[in-house]
Length: 453
Ligand code: NDP
Image (cartoon, rainbow, N blue to C red):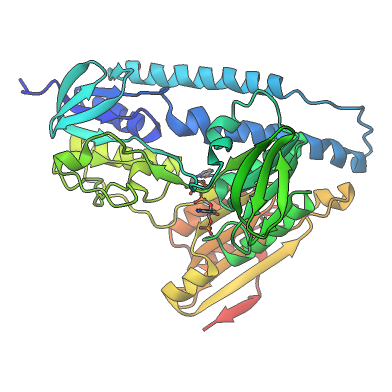
């Protein structure tokens, strides 16, 4: 009989923690998990899932407009924010129940309480003390905003999901995933949106062509995109929030939503006291097996800030459980992870940007196609689709695909298998396209737009 209460105890029941605990239990481990908020974590409760539902909701305004080009006369339409939020909440409650069912169905014992370390094998969980042979930290991240005067008047995406009413005038701050996604959501639902970003094109870190096209499409949709701009202070006035901008301009809005990044949630866990190495920015240092500086303590997901995406946390959690409890060593590999930004139009991407590919591989060919999607030949909408392939010279492998346009995330998910498998441009070329689709461009582009070499 083990000297510990559990073989594995997991702190945090989000995507990574739930997957790790279920898989470990399926390998026969006695597993406990604790969660201070709601089981499901950021993605399910206040992230990817509700965000995507809001993106769907916001797209209808454009769909109604586009329908006219196809002969439809649509009547006057109206939108109810409270009905949308109620419907979204109902779905999130359902998913929360599904997650609870998954845990109990796998025999994982749930503690609905906060966990923190007492020593390397002992945790304080709510009012109880539990011991475990191995411990997994999967506490995720939390929004971060700069400490400017009046920042207490701002909201983060957490609160945006539960606003009592749709703000008539809203500012989003940042140029990353969340700011671009929420600018599109608020804009589609009818708010007047100003997006304030300190850089010269949104989505830093993405391929330059993607950044250029998304920046220009945001503006075409009616978002007032203020580049190379920032907020120096926020003041509450009778008529709204006054944003004092670095340029000297002022702007009045009803809500200001900061999306200036997220930080690992390690506060009060007691990590330093038990010898778990944590970087200055809060990231827990781990190896390829998600092992921390303490032999039997592991960490997965956003708290390690490797690649902060739900499927990555799930993959890391699953790999950890297989390696530690399933007799199957599975180091994690973060190369060629596809990702998407659910901006409007959305972005789908896998592999290296053009700039990264040059640095990494040397000579590369770039295949590029920018066109008006077929639907908009009749809708009349001025929206561009971008398709881009990057091929390294030596092995002729496709090492990057970048798409901006309708269904880009769905398309890239499929093509990511080809890129991850190291397929060559010749393999793409000998694949027959499906006509008429946008994705056929990826197998029909024959002449590089440019070559670096
Ligand atoms: P991001 O890191 O994507 O973007 C943060 C933005 O805030 C950047 O544009 C950054 O500018 C800007 N910024 C940072 N610090 C400051 C500052 N002090 N003043 C002004 N601007 C600042 O973070 P998000 O909050 O958008 O999202 C957090 C993470 O969540 C993402 O990185 C992603 O991993 C994940 N996520 C994934 C989604 C998806 O898969 N679709 C959706 C939503 C979130 P600069 O570029 O100049 O540094």
